[in-house]
Length: 352
Image (cartoon, rainbow, N blue to C red):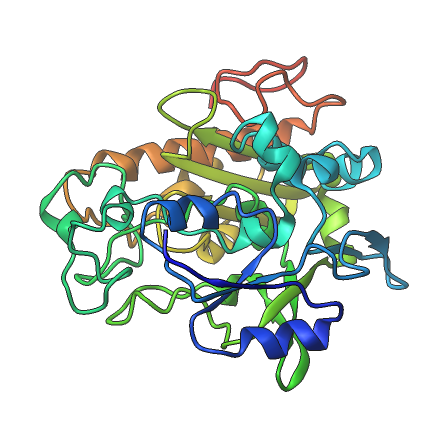
């Protein structure tokens, strides 16, 4: 690990000013950053510790009925908050499916959204990686790439974004509040992460010094509480990142779908909102045929980036399963294996 300066600002303004310096990085729980530093992947010259900044660890109901979640709220605290789990069940389910209980106890909301890819070539300083060292190439293109992207990738980078939490948030039109040198602004979460293109090292739209201070869920997001699920397929049920995942949320009027939200995880360098699939479900009767048709549209632009063509069909099936589970209704209690396709809960369809 390289030598670095450490500062602990007392105010947001001090934090932003300190982080403007080249080579600076914000430090909260550090569950991802410290691993990258110990492996020589990240080499910040200065760490700006934001854990003592006031007012960033609260969950608040806004006047319009939406939720504002401070960036320092712990993942476990949010997932186990009874009111939050009741109004945003798919988000709680996604949180509980990520990492281990110990990591969820430490990790923060803001840090989760900004965690780095788990591509093994990114983590190996001896490998060529445009995301880590621009212009060096992408060893994943000709290497072990069965877990890599099938949507939005480029020849420069085929990595995927690892967050479970971000997937249902994108489906529910969440946004982030960002404090920067020019003041505070709000960014739709769907626009926060960038696709790689020719500049995969630019992972987000954030500028130097920008700090996520809160996450916002609009009041409309809470209207999906009765029909919202997250499904995550992984190579082992515990402590693994998604091979593919899907969040689905529906509003029903009798036997018709009047609004649908779908987002995919594990398939691109950002959570992937499937708007064409959503539009295809409007007015449809919930059922296997409608869900399979929508899932096909969600993956219509997918193509392999290597030895991973199987992920396309897998993602279609996981999206259809998530829609079927959402249509069946959110269970009163989360299953013992949150988000797992192998979980069972009374009254939930299992045959999509």
